[in-house]
Image (cartoon, rainbow, N blue to C red; front, side, top):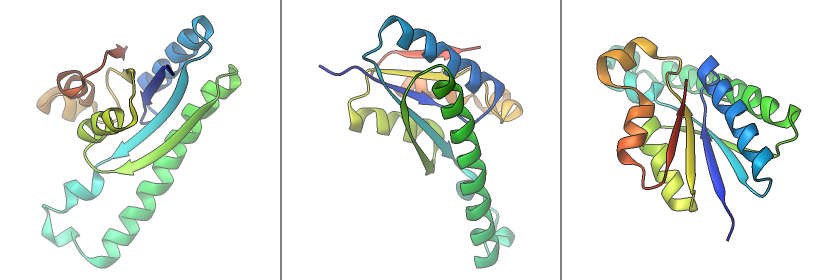
Length: 146
């Protein structure tokens, strides 16, 4: 049976450390298949603030998300590839914790690796971090990397 690992990233320092941790896991078990996921919830945030919900703003925010998500994905994939780890990647727009866990369930992921705090550290302190929510929701082992 294939052992599939999901690396959740946002391009932050902790996400890069999580990628380096995955490199170590693959060195021990080279058959691990790695997928990198980047999930952003910016459109979810602005939908509650009606002055920002104009078609122009939504198009601009969507374009910015795609650019930033691609940057985060590219940086993470580069860390893996420089160490000889092949990985696939995807970006999503939605609820980070929920979408990470939903993807893991749908794709038969056996292990999730995520950084302890991402780009939204202040929000995480107040509302709970994405990594904490992933631990609570996931059906598989989750490793949080500091």
